Length: 186
Image: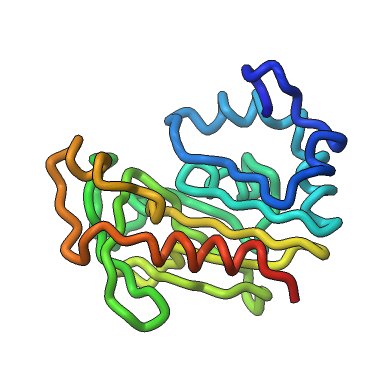
C-alpha cells in the first residue's frame, strides 16, 4: 500500500493491520517524504492507537522528525556523516554493532543513527562502534516503533551480490528480536 501501489495508505487499510513496515531503499529522503507526507497523520494516529511501525534503514530515517513521521523520541542522522563514524561513505558493507552487550555484525548501507532525547522512553537494542544508537524500540502512544539503521533482514543474496561476508554467518535472530520487540505490547 502507499504511493505508487494503487492502494492508498488510509486509516481503513491500516485498521486490519498489526504492523506497518517502511522498508529501506531509496536515496532521496526529501522526495520520498513528499510522496509519503500526506499519510503522516494517518500513520501517527494508527501507531498512537496501538499499531506497530517497523522502519529499516530508509524507513528508520522516515521515523524521525525532519523530514519524517515524527514517531521517535528524538531524531535521525546518517551514521556515515558522524565525525567518528567507522563507515565514511555510502558503500554496502558489514558493520560491527554491540547488540545488548554482545558483539555482532550486520549488513549496512548508509543507514541512520538514532539520537534520542534525554530521558527518552526507549530501548536501544544495538549501538554502532562510536556508541550511537543503531537499533531502537520505543513506545508511541499505545503503539510501538522499532527502527534499525543496519539491515537485520539481509539474506545470503545481499552479501553475495556485494562480495561481502558476515563473520557471524547470515542469521535471522536479530531480525526476529527486533520484530518481537516492535510488536510486543506493554
